[in-house]
Image 1 (tube, rainbow, N blue to C red):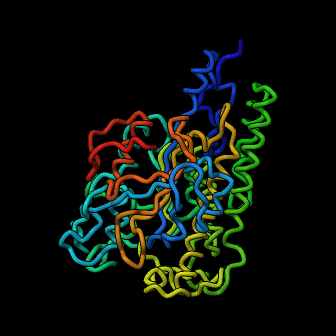
Image 2 (cartoon, one colour; image 1 turned 180 degrees about the vertical axis):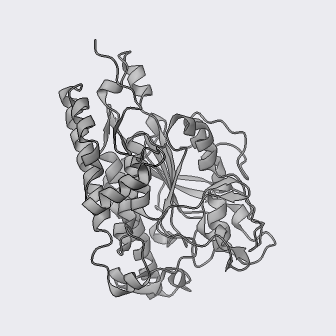
Image 3 (cartoon, rainbow, N blue to C red; image 1 turned 60 degrees about the vertical axis):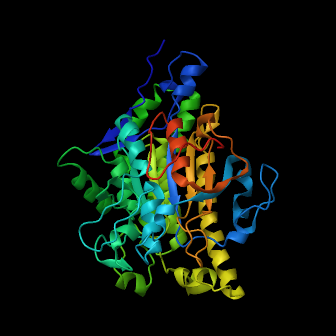
Length: 444
């Protein structure tokens, strides 16, 4: 009998290390239980700013037979793979005596459940975020404990929101109560981080050579790939070919990201590898994240579509006004129509991500079946700046531990952190408390 291929097998060549997806040759021949255990559960937290237009987000009825609201319609193909959860709250994002600054508090509190210290100095303080609790336990089994990505970089100092540091508006992940983790916005840098082998003195030289010669990372590992194929069965060879084709396609898109930029983009000195088109930027980041999960390079990720309080224009979809400005619509029907279109655009990008996860087969299921994705905002209605009844969606199967396909309404002002404790349990990470938690959300 052929030896089982290690789950940590990589293709190597000239400073490049291409991790592999889970192949049948990596599964121990110990029956169905062992094969199921080989598929780890991943967890991701996707954030959008400025709340939602709640009348077009919230289903009218509870349970599985609800009518899909307009904003959620792009997810129709996945309605059995996600649940909408109404009633969750982040009360520590309220002022609680600290005055203005709802946007800064919304993002900082979203994964920590803690009140951000009001300061724009160096003495920032919040709490450890749920993703980092998970990374502290699961990260020992993967190359990277966690991956933090987003479309907006944002400052790490200065006053960005009514006396709150820019660090609060730009960071969702907190390693400790005083240490936020900046996100990477450049798909090229995320991609190269995933595929560099980390040996000193080689990685930068390899990168430079590849860019000058217009070579693919796959050119450097081709010989190793051929040797591996000789050891694989037909199904695994097909799976390997599909995976390497996907890697090359993403690499091509990254290479083309900086081409054809207009004068404004060039004047802004957009980093090489960052598309000028916002949708293309989000989708490249999503695809690189899928690669990271597909290869078990990490099991914990955060993805911020835009920093909290973002006033990005959506002129490409005939909404030239700023997102934040429109969120303060004052019940103006024309502004509400535009904000709901922005909301639907973001959900369309979520649908793209779920499509990509669902397309990757893992055993008898898919990568989406073996994931848990929390999508939402730390603000409910952007016009009200409220932090209760948040727009929250939970997608994926959690390795069979979730019951998706429903609209779940919990008691008003149930702490969002109660959901997080329930999800941590499904990862095998037990925490007694997180932020302002009061228990575990059993309904999911």
